[in-house]
Each structure stands twice: as C-alpha cells, then as structure tokens.
Figure (cartoon, rainbow, N blue to C red):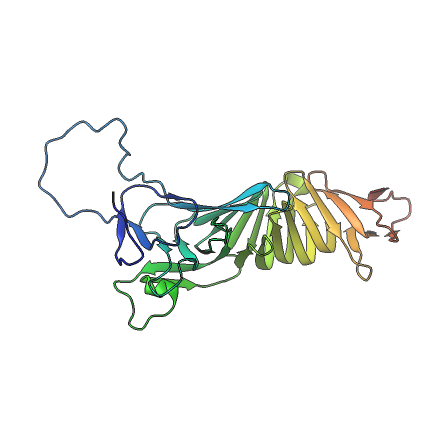
Length: 332
C-alpha cells in the first residue's frame, strides 16, 4: 500500500480510477493519468485476468460533496472529470502544508478540455465547465463540509517543480490554475432546457450555487420552443429550486414574450413561476394582448399563462376587442 503524508512531496501516477469522498486534510496528492510507457521488448501474449480493467478505460476522478439541510436531508453535489486522459485535463488534490494547521482546507482541481468538460451535478441541473476548483474544510465535529466550488472556463496543469517563494496553496503543490470566465462557457442542462453563463460559485454558507450572466437559454419544444435571458441563475440546494434572477425574459416561438424580475424554473414540471414587484409586475404579452400580475404561472409545454394574485396585489390586462384573455386568473 502506498501512503503519502503531508510531509512528503511527490506525484502519484494513477493507473486506476479515483472516486473521492471527503478530502483528507492530512494528505497531499497530485494525480494524473500515466503517460504511455516507453517501448519494451515484445512479450509473449497471455490471457488477461477476468476482472482486469480494460486498457484505456480508467474511470475519471470524481468528488462528492454532501450538504445536510435544515430538514436533515442529505443532498449531493457531484463534481467529476468526464475523461481520464492526461492529454485533455488534470485532477489534483492538495492538502494542508507543513506550516499550516491540520484543519486547514483541502483544495481539489478538476480540468477538462474535452467536449464534455468537467461535470457538476446540482439538484436537477447538470453543469458542464472546463475548470472547477473545490475548497473543502473539515468541521469541528470532524465531518467534511460541502465547501466552496468555483467553476468557469480556464485550464490547469502540473508544474515540474514548486516555484521559488511560492505562498499560494496550489502553487506550493506544483499546480497552476488559470481561470478565464467568459460568456457562454458554463453550460447548464435541465430537462429540455439548455442555459449558458460565464462563472459558477457555490458556497456552503448559504447552500446556493450562483451562475453569473449574461444568461442565455433555449428550450426545444416544437412550435412552443422558448428562448430567453436573465442576469444570473441561483440554484438553491436546500430548497431544490432553480431561479432566474434579474431582467428575466422568455420568448416563445409562437410569439409570446414574458418578463419578470425573478422566475422559478422547473423543466421537470414544465412550469415557470414569474414573480414581479409592486413597481414592476410580472408581464406576459401575446400580440396586442398584455397581461400583468404579481405572480404568473407559465406552463412551458402548452405555452399558456395563468395568474396567481398575491395578497394586496392586482391583475390587469389589455386585450383586443372580441378576443379572449390569454390567461385565466386563479387563486393561490
């Protein structure tokens, strides 16, 4: 068995897959897939062992963060490389150094330049991104926290040696990370919906993953397909909600345009809840018909909107003569 302590400095070359739970603060590891071996004399063929891993099919490394909510329910955030190839990315795990306390956080780096990127699964959302850095601290009770995740476009690589005078943790572990946030580089898939942003930050202090915009999205559904935009996306892990925030606009292929300050979006339920403010009610427009309310329910598959009147709120509309209302009021 190979054991690497925090006092040792070296590199572990992996020929097997890694599946990581809590990051151990007492271990310093760098990992990469082994390079092709130099040419060896030809050997006699032999039968492979029945349980041997097929060559070139190493399982990519992954890390599971578990968040315990106020309801005592455990919810998982999964980060994983989608390839085990050293040519398209790296995985590195860097624990506390000699001069740091043992409860100092550990840092994990995932990078992947392949088309599937690094995959982050949060609630109903599958997120693809080129680079993710995970910082995780052990709590006072000895359990691993769910930590902090920063993800964006960018790259990571191993250095041949630790830079002289290096003080930053990853540099001291001979890892160089180069984040490069840019629009349309964080890909979010939720059911039929594809969203794009430029940077994701998740923090255990509130359990919310925030994806900075500009956010653009598209939902394929034939004649009722949608496109849209917002300033950012919040994924609340505890409440299992995905919310589009700031200047949200939904445009259907059939011509409906809906706007709101905030939209709770659930592709699985085919439903978007549009929330307005007293100064700026939620609004849905189809042709010359304009419908405004404090809360609008938008049924995505049917391209239909319904109102929910909040206490003290109002529902208003401007409709063409002889035309029926594009929405049917309902009570909460």
